[in-house]
Length: 118
Image 1 (spheres, rainbow, N blue to C red):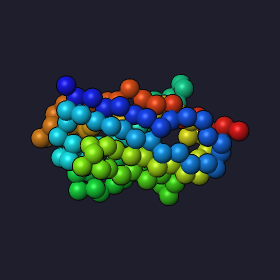
Image 2 (image 1 turned 90 degrees about the horizontal axis):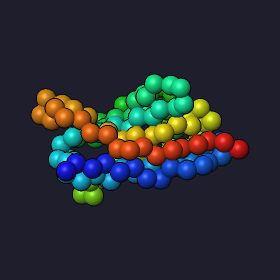
Image 3 (image 1 turned 45 degrees about the horizontal axis):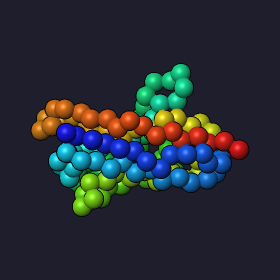
Image 4 (image 1 turned 45 degrees about the vertical axis):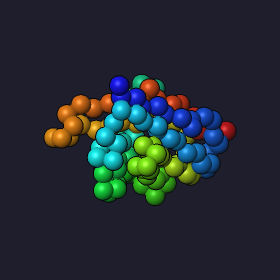
C-alpha cells in the first residue's frame, strides 16, 4: 500500500523559514518524479516545485529563490525548505508522486497546513 505523509507545517511569521517533509512507503521512490503542491482557501491547487529522479527541479515563479525541493532516496523522503515566507504562502501543502509512462498511478499525501502570519 502506498503512503505519503507530510509533516512540518505550522505557524510562522512573515520572513521566517519552515521545512516540510514527506515520508513515503510502497513507492519505487528513486524512480518517481515528485512534487509539492499547495491549495489556499478558495483557490485551486497549484504546483509549487517538482523534482525528477535525476534531481532536476522546477519551481513556480512565485517561490523561485525562496523555496528548495530536495529528495533523499535512501530515506524515501521528499523535502521542501521554505524561506522568506510571505502571507500569500499560506496554504495546505501536499506532496505528490507524479504519474509517468512507467508509473501511471499518481499518489497524494493528506496535506499539512502552513500559515504565515504575524
